Image (cartoon, rainbow, N blue to C red; front, side, top):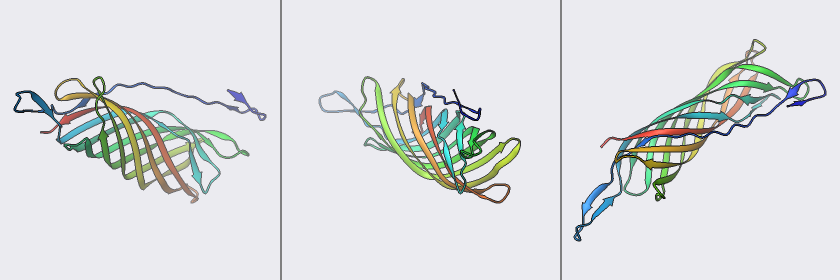
Length: 230
């Protein structure tokens, strides 16, 4: 906590989080070879997944304005997806997700300084993801993924009981994901993951008609459940 020359106080906060998850997958196919030994075959087929976690939004600059969204509170994240496993280590899926972060501070500029804010920013997105599952190590199977799609951003933010922005817009969205999966039964698996999600630019207007353009970056820790549809 630092006190500036004009008496205002400035602080920073860093939060480290650890989460667990559950993922549901099909059992490996088993075939008999001439030697009589059972050999597992790669999984393939459609699946459903559900994911939940916490999102930590990054400070966001506001174009056409000297202000920026200077601090957010951690907020909830949830997603559902329909996907398909191929015989190789690749998977594809279509994911619908929602995330929300409360706005705590807006930094106007060095002349006016920071001001307490209220309200939140909601993001809803539809993204096509591509995953690669690596070979498992000691019961865990790491994965890496990336996706691209669209997002709808809703901004409802007030400063000193006055509306700063109350508008929404649609923009592109993208994300990268890393994580690991641990199978707990033939069909169920636990997943722990991290993703960096980005949406922008959202083009809106403030109550006085001034344009407001900004983007949103959210770092998310999440857990998930996957269910095989075969």
